[in-house]
Image (cartoon, rainbow, N blue to C red):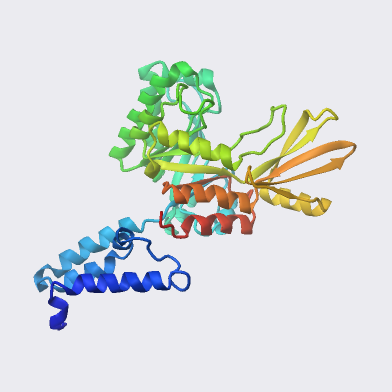
Length: 398
């Protein structure tokens, strides 16, 4: 290829760059909806044309190597955020069916394994056909290993190094033998006294998995007292060891509460995210968990909760349609709200619908977080899923 002489001049590149920037800002409200607001943003967003011109000026014997470097740099800058989906179903056919209905999914996280006792006992089985099919579709598989909310059993394991190491060995063997891309560790209900022990467990487990080129993500609930981080989960230590931290952004109000409220509200979730970022979890390692369900609260005449039933996003939409219920948008909470009467009892529902989930997803996108995790696949409807997907993958300039 013969390069024009003017393209070799030192003044040529900055002029091209500035002309492109002026053009993008001129039509920023039209075709160029993602036009940069500064030269620095333009330098980051439109590095390819400038890099290409620079490559043309290199000698022929260096061109291939420089192109390779440029391609790697560009793919890093344009890396898409993760879209993880937990799934409760363990059977191959049911998992396959759900995955087919969730385009854009990048990580499948089945709840396959449960810590079942001492000496490394783990119950559960992976589905080889699901893993093979996921890999064929370029999906990662991060199998869940949970503790069944059993804080006492977890304490009996975590307080002894040999018990920890036996469990770590078994988890690593399961990950390797099943060709998993990652492990998603879900240890909930831990005792505060296990703070150091759990950090040690995660650190050693991550190290052993990394030797096998396997990732580790750790699920964590929001802290009860923001900014303190004095419970069993040491945010900074766990984030330093694991590849990703998943903030379980749900159950602001849940079964057992005496007051009705949303599964997750926008200000509550914003506070939880800020807390994690301030207490040692970098945004690039933080995945935001969002709910595909809501609670249907039954209240007595005094307004106290009598009972509640969890509804899927699909079930909530169907119920509201069936009852012809009037929904009201609560801008402060970032949710729709509705009430209805049934058998003389008042019901309240705070809808975690697609508009709310888009706002939640924007938190992850605008904070440049690692991605979003959805609890759980099968509860969503098509429009809800696509709203989350398109919001997460749309460009942001901040």
